Image 1 (cartoon, helix red, strand yellow):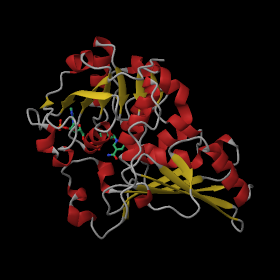
Image 2: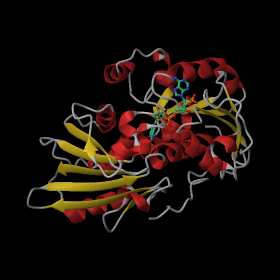
Image 3: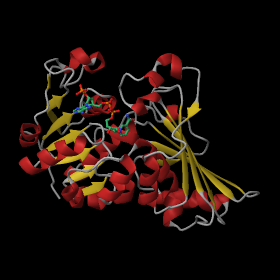
Length: 348
Ligand SMILES: NC(=O)c1ccc[n+]([C@@H]2O[C@H](COP(=O)([O-])OP(=O)(O)OC[C@H]3O[C@@H](n4cnc5c(N)ncnc54)[C@H](OP(=O)(O)O)[C@@H]3O)[C@@H](O)[C@H]2O)c1
């Protein structure tokens, strides 16, 4: 364990021009132990952060220029590199940083999330070119894996949907309350930033606005991630796109013998000491957590059908990505987990 409390940690952000990179820089701007030393982008190389993202003009890193990615020099100049690249673009960069420097890495992509490379290759349909690094990586969900994160050289930040669904099911799984003879159903709705900052026909304003659709009905890549982390084989996961910028609301159903009050008590107890997960007294909205690293859960049991329903809300680029990455960073470097993450939600 590396305890750097009191010091400034040298941080680089690779792929800093995307939604998660920009949100990460917003959060790091208020982190007292962070010095951002480099930010990379191919499109905006040479431009200053504040010229690309005017909302970050007040950041302490506002005048930092974007540079082209040189993984070796980024690694050598940093204590930690946040890698905000798409899957498959990430593992070559992680490999080069890992081999050429001592920097620790928080990887936002799916490239190191699974326990083994075979599951990744099957799920993502690409050959993994850094299989030997899996043993140095841990899954970056602190509520599941805090001790491993503390020690790891590479932390694989979870997917946004998996974060919302795993947090909704974890207490029930750990308490063995789920009747495994019935499928577990996760019905998740995401805002459009979940798809990344790219020019795609189906993400145009007129295609998304005033509309609501399910997608990936034959199987979404996040289903195997959720299944592996929870040890649930019979999961049915259906994602939806909703016309909002940020936020995920997952409605998760499972069969259980436990009564509603018992379930609520177990969830409250399980998350009692977690700084970012709270059990809510009424069904939560995505605007209850927008711009934060929080997850809010609501549990209800329908005695007639025997189905428990858990509603889980997060901000997909908060607890679903960049907030979670800062939480992982705090765990890795021995800071209080809440450091830099005390935002009040932007409501409504
Ligand atoms: N958006 C979310 O809610 C969310 C949540 C959880 C996890 N994630 C994961 O986080 C990662 C980043 O997501 P995002 O939403 O920020 O994506 P994004 O908005 O599309 O940004 C991707 C970033 O990577 C750079 N980039 C793209 N292709 C590249 C390549 N081949 N080589 C080098 N750089 C490349 C882009 O900048 P240039 O083109 O300027 O180089 C940009 O800075 C992805 O792996 C995603 O799956 C996203």
